[in-house]
Amino acid sequence: SFPTRRSSDLAKKIAANLFNNGLSPEGRYAAVQACHAPGSDDNCILLVYDLIQKAEIGRFVPQSGWADDYRFPGDGTIELEYRKLGHFRYALTGEFLDLAAWKEAQLTCGDYSMALITIERILKEHEGKPSSELADRLIRAIDRVTPQIVPEHAKTLAMAKKLRGTCLEVCGDREQALRCYQEALAIDPKAGVKRNIERLTRMRKV
Image (cartoon, rainbow, N blue to C red; front, top):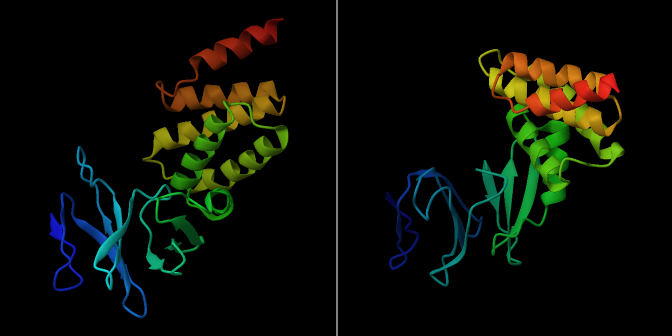
């Protein structure tokens, strides 16, 4: 654990190590990002303090993960900075105000890990049935990051193939979707695509 201390009578211990922290230019606001602490309420928590008021004013787990730096507009929000992606606002309640911009940044600029996680979340939000236009955008994002996947991350590659297959189905390209599912299964027998393969194989015979 570590103490978060910024004044003579503001201190707090949490059950996690420190990942990083940030301080506003005038020294009024501070952010403290905790690391993983499985089983604890402090797992990956971001704490925000008003050092003049000597008060904790924000406590939440950022949906976008650990940031590289912080900005403090002083309007009830905090901005989390991510290199190559930009700044994204949260309300101090934890509401992700720039969620749409974050998703777009991940699709166009994010690394393969975060981009694929974002694509998976988008598909879940649409119950696996996004619009054809959105599915096409997701396919482009998958194709952008797939060459980045290192050989030892075979399960991630299988995930990319599975997601691509889902999007291709939406776009009406069943043959390419089936091929993606088969490739995913060949890479990872636990990719979760067997039923997809069986369904598309039956449809091919009709």
